[in-house]
Amino acid sequence: MDQSSCDIANKKFPPDHLRIFVHQGIVNKDVITTTERIKHLLFAFSSIEAISDEFLEALPDVENLVLNGNQKFPKLTRSFFQHFPKLTLIYVHNNEDLEIDPDAITDLEKLKILSVQGLRYKELNNKVFHGLDNVKRLSMVKCHIENTEEDTFQHLKNLEEINLSSNKLTGFQSGTFRGLDKLKELSLQNNKLGNLDWTQFDLLPSLEYIDLCDNQMTKFDVVKMRKFFQSFRKSIL
Image (cartoon, rainbow, N blue to C red):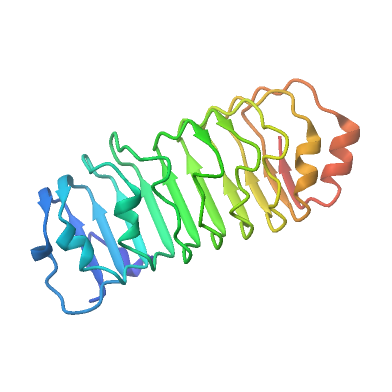
C-alpha cells in the first residue's frame, strides 16, 4: 500500500480503499459506502469489539490488509483471514494486546508480504506457515519467539527476506532453514543467540546479507565463518 494511497492525515483514499479509522464498537456492513470493489482494507487507531460476518463476506477482493495502532481488535483467527482469499499483503503492527491463533495466517496462496509486530507466537513450526508458498518477505518482529522447529520454513520456498529481530531466540534446530534456496536477507538482531553452529547457514545458498548484532555470541568459528561469508555482500555481527 503506497504512501499516497494511505495518507490518513490528508484523507487521500482512492475508491477501492476502505478505511476503518478511529472506530468504536462493532464493525457492520453499513460502513461500506462505496460500490467499488474494495482492494485495500485498513483498520487504524480504533477500538473494535467485533466484526460482523456480513461485513467480511462483502469484501472478497481485498488484496492489502493493514491493522495499525488499534487499541482493541478481535482475536485473529484463520476464519477471519480466509474471508480474503486474494490477499497479497498483510501488515499488522502496533496494536495493543492483540491475540492470534497459531494457524491464523495459513492457506493464502496469493500472499507475498507478511509483516507482523508485537503478536505472541513463542514457537514457530511448519504449521504456522502452511499454504503460504508465494510469500517473498516475512517479518515477525517483537513476537516473543523463543524457538523454531526443524523445517519451520518448508512451505516458504520463495522467501527472499526474513526478519526475526527483537525476539527471544537462543539458537536453531538442525534443518530450520532447509528449503530456503532463494533467501537473500536474514535479520536476527536483538535476540538471545549464543554461539552458533555456522553449518546452519550452509542451507542458504543465495544468502547475501545477515544481521546478528545485539546477541550473546562470545565465540566465533573463523574457519566456518570464512567459508560462509566469502560470497556475502554484507554481514553485521
